[in-house]
Image (tube, rainbow, N blue to C red; front, side, top):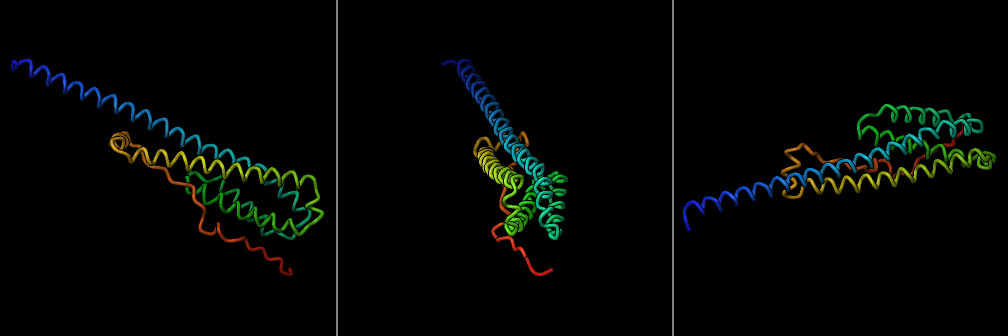
Length: 193
């Protein structure tokens, strides 16, 4: 073989490797973009369900207030939790505010259990059914978000994608996790007032 042929073959090999790396990088980037969009979509579904719950709460509170006007602490807690959720901008703030609101709603529903005439009220039943449905939707949306985040986080840690993720600035996502107090049963005190 001539020296020139070896150079040509070497150059062809270098160009081929370069083309393979470029297409590999493009493929990795496009996959990361698609997965990132999937995580963002899942996160927006959580926001949609949280907004739905936020929209239902005032009607539920007003219905219960007619029967349990003396439970002002719970109504205040719900209002404050809703305000925190509405003002939350970061992922962590939304998760914390959502957990606080869930706890306040649990206490409200426990209070409502002590009013048989309220439980028989058609508006209350409809609202609580809608709220329960929404809570289930939130749980499903969180699960889907966590699955999307897991897939994305796994992808950006695998070789050689980790290189492209670092170059293009893709960062991992946090998971939705239950707050520390979520495993505790809400305590409602019906002591004499």
